[in-house]
Image 1 (cartoon, rainbow, N blue to C red):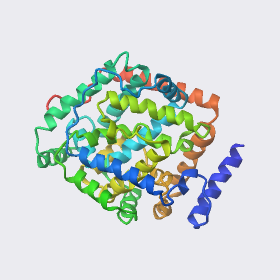
Image 2: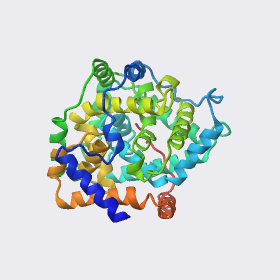
Image 3: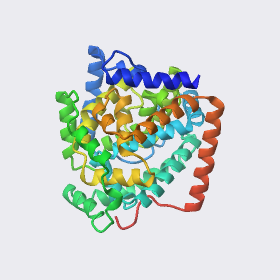
Amino acid sequence: MYWNQLSFLLLRHECQFHNKEFYYYPWMVMDSPASPEINDYIQSRLQCLIEGTKHESPLAVPDHPPPWLDQDQFLRGRALFYEYKMGILMSSFRSLVVGLSIPNLAIPLCLTKRSSTPAKAFKRYLHTGGMVEEIYKIIPWESTHVLDTINRYHRLAAQKIRAMSKEQRDTLALLQFQDLPQHPYALSSTDRGLLEVLQTMDYPSTHLGRELFREYRHTHVVFSDTDMALVHLAFFATFVQHPISYGGGGIGEQDLDAFLHYWRVIGYYLGVKDDLNLAGGGSQSELCAVWRALSKQLLYPYLQILDGVSLKMVKALTTANDLNLGLIMFSSMEVNGNELSELWNKFPVHTKFLYYWRRFFMECLYRTRYFRITINWLLSTVTTRLLEKLGPYSPLETDV
């Protein structure tokens, strides 16, 4: 069975790079023209995000449950995490790497002085993974202690960073790297090839999309409503859009709907406004259309100008985990239906092998239930021991 699946992966890739009408991923044909109703829905959600760039997030936990809360759906969505823990965490990590290309998110993280070197990045995001697991353990309408802690950290960072001008933030963030050894941030030949390909990447643009990019890029508001909506999005969108790529090929649509409801509830308790909560407010197909539009209208323009603080933060994170930045970006673009064939041609043989091995591991091996249970247990055991070894941690320094 596994060999047949691996052969299918290889055939899919050959057909794609020879421009043949063959796709292994069902979502890779989802970019056909949207209906007028879907287009209207996308425009309304993008308009809310534009407005959200102008307002500071309250970063506070509401004192009552949302009126749309479905407790059974919430619990069903939470159970999906324990079934596909490694796949879900991997999808969130990939979203983090790609999301750091957005300076509005990378610079505040840099100014906390906890992510700018590989050692600090490893420790920070290991603890972030631990915090995410703690979120999955709680029932927020019964206890919000974990969410209170997260919001408190955000408020402390926001209080200090909001006191600076945009120019001060940009300058101070760059100064974080001034006296550090530069070899962790050095670009490999693959990294340089990636930047060349990203700069020439073609993507559709709309008037409203250009307005969103312009408003978001030039806003002086930090920890804005839109910032928190985009951070929230990273924890569920990639997995829901592409479950096959993370071992979830057997997941039904109802389970994914429950997972979305789970994160809609968590977003609510983290202070994400309903009209900016991209885990709810529409059907799964409508939400996926909005996420794809956001990728093309907001993320892709930032990727084309990836440099400075964002690039250094991305390199610190990938170096800390001994990861191939080009391969992460290639895979992220691929599952969104944007094949970077020029980048693939620049990959050495061992990088292409890693690509196929990761696909085979996640889409074939990890999809098998008992193998998945074993891997999830190993992940939890290793993570727990590492966190115990690292000891107490605060995600920001007091002299931000």
